[in-house]
Length: 311
Image 1 (cartoon, rainbow, N blue to C red):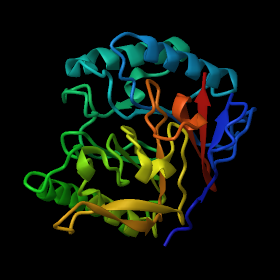
Image 2: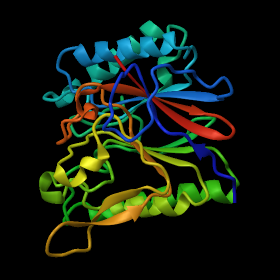
Image 3: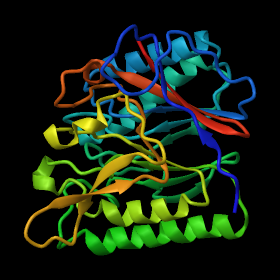
Image 4: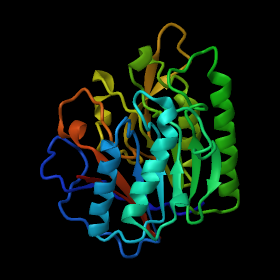
C-alpha cells in the first residue's frame, strides 16, 4: 500500500474578505517550487458571448503574474453555452485561443475538455474513460454517460457499467503499485441536491462507493461543475469549496423506492469544483456565490494543493 500525499487546504487569491467560507484564504500566493506538475481547472462558461472567456483569460493572466509560468495541462469541466448546445465547439476554440494568448509556448492539445449538460457531444471532448496524462491519470465521465436527471428506467445499468470500468482501472493502478494521483472529471457532482426532484444524480452512489474504497490506497481527486445548491446542500458552497478526506457529504440513496433520499457519507477522497467561470448558483448569499474563479492544482512528492484565483 502506498503512502498517500497530504492534501493542503484550498487558498483563494485576490479576495479580501470571505469570512463565511470554511477554507483558508491568502491575499498572496506563492507557487510551490518543488511541484512537479501544475494543472489549471475551470468549468461552466455558459456564455453566448465572450464575457466568461475573457474572464478566463484575465484570471490565468493573474496566475502567470503570480509565477505560474509553465502549466502542465488544463482540465475544463463542461457547459460552454447556456442556451446553444451546439456552441460547445466554438467554446472549445475560444478557450484554446485565450489560453495560448497568455501561454503562447504551451500546447493547446494539453487542454482536456469534457461534456456538460448544455453541450452536445462532439469530437472536441475527451472520451469517457481512463487516460494516462504522464505525471497523473484522469478518468473522464462525460454528460452522456453520467447525465443529470437520472431515471430508474435509463440510468442504473449505464452508471453501474461506468463504475465497474472505473473500479477495474483503479485496481490496475493498485496492483501495479502506480502511485500517481487520479483525477475523476465530471460535470454533474456526486452530492445530493433537490434539483429535478432529487433525481439530478440519483445513482451517484455507484461512483462514490468505488472512489471511496479505492481512495484507501490511491490519491483520488473528484472535480465537478454544474452546482445547483438549495437549502439541503448549502454546505457545498458556490464557486469556492473544498472537501478533504474525513469530511462528511450527502450522497443520494437510489434504493429508497418511495422517495429520493440521501445518506451522510465520510469522504476518503478529495472533492471540489473546477472553479466556475461564467456563473455560480447557491442558495446562500455568501461570498462564494458571486465569486467566479479558476483553479490550480499543484502536485509535489508529498502534497496535493489547491488554489482558486478570481479577477
